[in-house]
Length: 89
Image 1 (cartoon, rainbow, N blue to C red):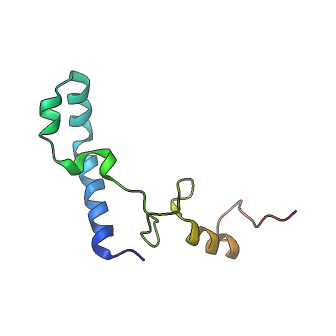
Image 2: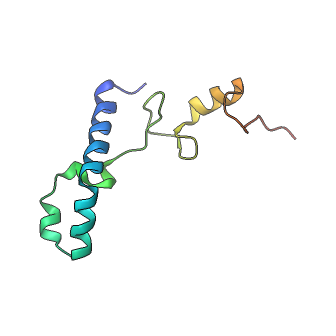
C-alpha cells in the first residue's frame, strides 16, 4: 500500500486541478501563456497520477476499473466485479 502522504499529495493535486480548471481553460483559449505559467504547478492535469482506489498503487493501474491489477484480480476471483469472470479455453 502506498504511503498516506503520497495518497494525500495526489488528492491535493486533484483538488487544485478542479479549482483552476476553468481559469486554465480560459487562459489557454485566449493564448495567454505567461499568465498560465503563473498558476500553481499542481493545477496542471499532467501532475495527477492514476492511483488504485483501494491501495493507492500507481503501477499496473486499470483505467476501466479504477484499481490496480493486483486488487482487480483479487476482487474478480471473489466474484465482486460484475461481468468479469476467469477465462478458460
